[in-house]
Each structure stands twice: as structure tokens, then as C-alpha cells.
Amino acid sequence: MLSGDRLMQFLDGAAATAEIKRLVMSSKTVRMAVAFWGKGASEELGLMSKKNDVTVICNLNSGGTNPNEIEYLLGNKISVRQCSTLHGKVYLFDNCVIVGSSNASANGLALQGKEISGWSEANILTNDPVLWQAASQWFSALITDEITSDDLKNAELAFSKRRASALPQVTASGSLAKALRARPEIFESKRIFVGVYGSLLTTADMRRVKIEQNKHRSDRSIDAVRWHVPTGANLILFYVNKNSVEFHGFWERNENEWKSDSLPPLYFMHKISKIYGFSSTGILSSWRNAVAEFYKNEVRGSKLDAKHIEFGSFYQKYISKTKILNVMDDHKRLRAIESGFFESGFWRRPELDCDIIRVFTDNEEKSCRGGRIVKIREEIRGGEKIKIFTFEDDPSQHGKPRPKFRQNGCVATFE
Image (cartoon, rainbow, N blue to C red; front, side, top):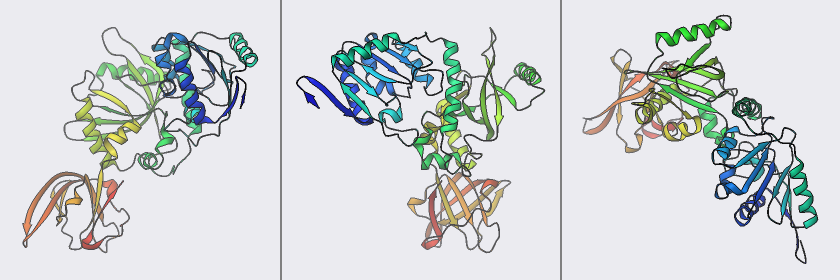
């Protein structure tokens, strides 16, 4: 609403984002007292273009602010301070102010990739000089503290716990991979990583692990890794050697570590049975294939022979493209090539290229066997070209529910 040169305008979350970004670009100075900050907010709002002209106050202690975003702001020389009692959301510019409910987060600003179902936000933009002056004085009167490395470390733990309680339990009886495929937005900013390593801890390292276990009444669920994993993060761990990929369980990084002048530090963690309610990764065959590809592309040859990657990024780059083929073998042509490997042939169809194969036979209680494809060859039989798949038998594939097969006995599915 306009009254002369006076402006009073209502903004929802999306409108607030656009208006804040415009005002950041056009203002000489920017001050933001906004309680909670989420991943990507500073980039989305254009703060990197201002830097020296921006002052931010946040609430770092309550668990509602992503400490990685604050660390990113500080690393880019933006002035950031904390106020443990702050709950307001005030965006101050040269001659106007936005006051309302929108935090600098996925939900508050309607950013892409929302963490959970978005809230309905309400804000007011005004250039009324009386209101602007009152907001400016309120901003200056806030009691704030500088942000230390210990503050960021504590914020990581608080943020992790709050995210865990806020995560919707989407098909918790299913797998992480299926949940991510169905609802990728709920995993945004959740510190879940896939960790892959190709070198075991040394004898000296294991002695340090033993000492740490003894501090906790010989707790054998405690172990360690050589590469830095954020405190409080969850880790889906795999070990890769020359012949296989081994799943080493779910872990949570604790705050303890051991440092040496001559060796990389050890970062301690403890084993957990579930990550956000999920006790299964999904089909291990497809994970092993994806982990092997990740190791080959991004880990092999690195200094520590180890690396972790965000779960969502790993899924998009390596798992989501894994194709699982279900095959009906009425004539039980499935035969063992050597211990642990099986071979099956069927008519050639171009769309049936896949990573994982499952072979079903009739009239057997546990008719399904399957696993990761290790070899494909073509043969001509009866004047027809067929593909022969050799696969590594995976017990996790045994006895799977039989799908409804299309004509010619084959159907391609994805997991």
C-alpha cells in the first residue's frame, strides 16, 4: 500500500526472498538480525556481493542454524555475531526494513530443496522512517558475542540433534535409498555421508582405538577413521579392497579425536543401528557397484586412500542410475560357473542393459537369485542373439517377491 512516498507491503516467503535479494544489491549497508540460517541462504540472498557492507546476527545455540552456513559467511569476511536470545527476523537496509517470520533458511525463504514441508510465512516491508529508526535502535541494542571455533563445534552437535528430531520418518521400515528417491527434499542439510576407504588402520592406530574403547568400559562399538568427518555426522561406511566391497555399518562421529605431530589425526566414532530411523541401506549389490565406481573415480590415489561424500550427492551420482533387471527363467537355465558366480541367458533386447540381475524360476519357495553383473557376452543360439549375464551371487537378493512379468518373460525395474 502506498501513501505518498510511504510504502507498506505484505510479503510471503517467496516474495520476501526476491525483495531481500533486490534490496541487498541496491543498499550500501545491510544489517540482518535473523535467528536461523540454513544451507545456501547467503548465496541465495546475494550477500557474497556485499561482504564488507553486511552485518549478521544469528542464534547459534538453539540448533536451528546450520553452522556450516555461518562458517561460510565468516570465511568470506562477513561480520557475524551471535545472540542466544534472538528469535526475531529483521532485515535492515538503507531506508527500509522487512520484519516478519521468515528465517534465512529453506523453509523461511521458500528456497529450492526444502528440508521439510514449508511453513506459511508472513512479512511486512516498510520505508516508514519512524519504524526504520525503531528497528535500527533495536538491532544496535542486541547483546551479542563473537563466534569462536568452540561455538561452531557445539552448534554442530545442537544442529544435528534438532535435524534428527525434525526429520519425517518416511517409510522408516524401508531403506535409506528408497526414502531418498521418494522424498529427496527431507534429506537436505542432514549430515549423512557415505565413507569409503581402501586402507585399514595401522597397528599403532588400533592401539589408540583400544585405549579409547577402554575409556568407555571396553566399548567395542567405538572405532576411528583417518580422515576428517564433521562432529555429530552419520556415516555409511564401506571398505574397498582388490576383490570386493564390504559394508561396515552405520556410524556416528563423536567429539573425540587423537592428534599426532607425524601422522594424520584419528577421528573417533561409535556404531549405531539406524540412521534417522532407517536400519537398511537398500540393496547391497547396487551399493557395492556404486561404491566401487566412487572409489575408482574419487578416492583411489588420494593421500589417505579414503573420502566421504554427502549421501544425496552419492545417490544422485552413483546409485540412482543403477538398473535392476528381473528375469523369468522358466527352463531353469541358471547355472553355476564357479563358486559364488552364476550365469543366465535370455533373448537380447537393447533396453535390458543393467547393473543388477535377479533371476526367478517357477514353483520354488525361494525362486530368486541375483547380484551384481560382472560380465556380459553375446551368443547366437537357434538363430537368435542372446545376452549371457554372469553375476556375483548376493544372498540379499534371494527369495525376493516375484514381479508381474511382461511378454517374453522380462521386465526392467529400478531400486
